[in-house]
Amino acid sequence: MKLLKTDLKNNVLQSMINLMDTNRAELLSANKKDLEAFSKDDQAMYDRLIVDDKKIDSMITSVREVMQQEDPIGQTISHRVLDDGLEITNKTAPFGTIMIIYESRPDVTIEAAVLAFKANNKIFLKGGKEAIHSNKILVDFWHRALNENGLDNSYIQLLTLNRQETQDFLKNPSEKLDLIVPRGGERLIQFVKEHARCAVLVSGRGNNFLFVDKTADWDKTIKVILNAKTDKISACNALDKILIAKDVPDYEAKLKDLEAILKAKGVELLVDSETQKILKDEPIIPNDDVWHEEFLALKCCIGTVDSLDDAIEKINIYSGGHSATIMTNSKEKAIQFMENVDCAAVYQNASTRFTDGGKMGVGAELAISTDKLHHRGPLGLKELVTNKYYIFGDGHIRE
Image (cartoon, rainbow, N blue to C red):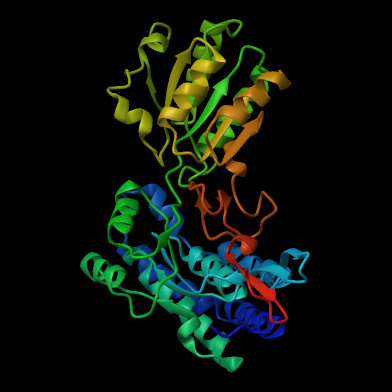
């Protein structure tokens, strides 16, 4: 694929900013159609679907931030000259063509496309049918921005396919796919892995854990739990599971305090058998499957563990590999937790809600990767590249 000059790419992004800003009414009208057609039974998905002026401002900010970032293509990773004079340079290069599959979030149509385009990739956007009107108008804006700068529509394309058509596309795409990013639940990820013919980078489930150590500051713990659990239930970085060390001072009183505070916020609780000895009115966690579950709702599990090692083991068995927090005033325990918990982001005394490209200084993100190759955590502009070796010789042969 032809490499585009940085100025040209940035001109497209500036055109997109102008189009979104001056055509707000058109976008809001399209989103209203999506909202009216959507059942509110799934509140988390409904929340993701909403576009208002604040969300449009956020989209514009995402595009502007990417526009201002350094072009990630052609950056030197390493350079060496061998003893025989052979010159070897490793540089960043585009993936080629990316496909992303996602549900109900029109802002992904902006963030995914802006990152892919600035990194000189083409992208297929397979958004959910619930956001079809919003996505169509946003991709129309993208096409106008491309055309205004002498580029065709092939860089950013919207796929409006049903399940069977998506399966057929994965098996026989209209052009070679180099990377697929499924953003969603286990069924979607397995579906893509089963049918894809190229690399798949998983943006997996959240199911994030918080462990309360005996040295934790209780007031800070409550503050962090409330933010992580109730600030935005539809986010993949929301909290689902709380583990409390049995040796926490005033263990019984603190459990009851936590119960009262969460219930006052409308959070449904499930507890393990040890915790239920104290929180007698709360239903017990019915089976192990619940420990694996990402709720995306005002719902939370509370469990009791005997030690830090027990907490680490439980998190590594059940979490989605996304984010985990330890509340402790012991730096030694924090480091032990952070080094041994197998998650993309690990925290001491902070909310899991910070696992976000913008909050972590990456800017716009394609997804939060829970894979280990080729990147883990927020997939920002610098992560949407691969590499290529440039070798310069003078008649060199290998003997």
